[in-house]
Length: 245
Ligand code: NAD
Image 1 (cartoon, helix red, strand yellow):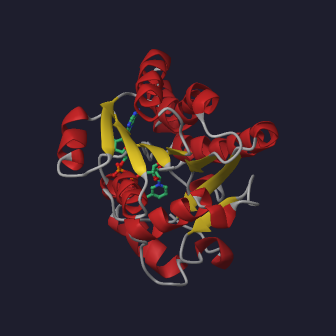
Image 2 (cartoon, rainbow, N blue to C red):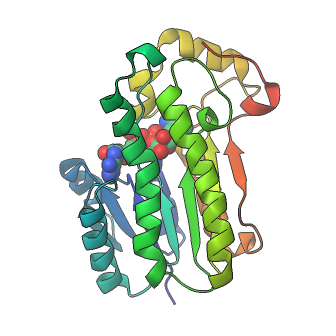
Image 3 (cartoon, helix red, strand yellow):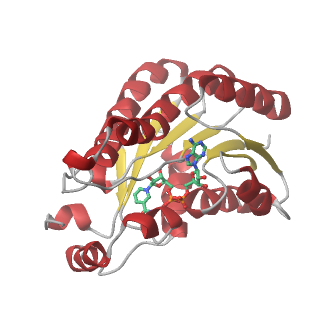
């Protein structure tokens, strides 16, 4: 039977690379994104995809989109909660609106998506991968909202792994290091870029495909006894333990 994945934030960056990696492995993919125009452009020319515009932080939109995916695929093998936003700034300048915007997409999104999709996921055999960040593991300046949201996602994954283990659904987290996507380009100042290069043992940013490979591995049969884990694809950043601006 053809395997099916739902990828959020699939219009570009890591989500689009993940979509293409699943397709190359013979899966069908539901591509979800809040940006309808960019999503249509990304899905154009791809076979075996369904593209649905939805905001993962809106419970009504999530329920409607999940129903559409269930009607299209019947069952879902993998759910990839990749949609995310970054907002870097000092604590004093992080308004409550900015804080809530980050929490809604990065934390409420994966919670709502799993609630809506688990009922029609393969049981046993389903896999959820939540995308966190090295900023959710190590604290550094400017990342109070983003880092806190990603730390919470790491714990959410563990909670889901414990609860969904009973129905045979595995849940893991991928924590990427820096990757040159639109998200990173918006918040990585020259000082941050320089610091990352110096702090990362592999001396470079990652590329989208390297994160997609880690995600797809965790959804594959090779990872059938792996659940509740955090897999960092970060060029050795956490191992080195150097500080960041
Ligand atoms: P990106 O900005 O290129 O892509 C993110 C996608 O998510 C966009 O297409 C955007 O429209 C979509 N999106 C945003 N809010 C949404 C919402 N509410 N509902 C549905 N879709 C929404 O970013 P990326 O770098 O590919 O990021 C993907 C994930 O990887 C994010 O969770 C991010 O936090 C994480 N991450 C990225 C980096 C990095 O350096 N790029 C590092 C660590 C973690």
